[in-house]
Length: 78
Image (cartoon, rainbow, N blue to C red; front, side):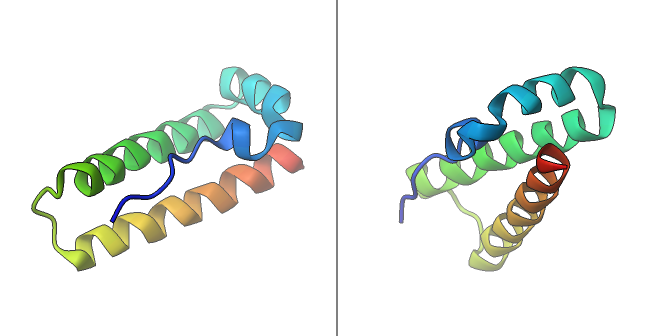
């Protein structure tokens, strides 16, 4: 099962410039974005290579990524 790459700046182009500013000026935002990107890369690796990760582990990773996405969106749109 392969999913499309999640790039938040492409998904929310109206917030891309503000996300760049926040990434430089807000440590919490930068850490959330870094974690989101790391999780996305790991999920994509597992899905692309059919790596050995239990479905429950992958599900938890996706839930965490979704929570981070919501948090990032809230901060960027405030």
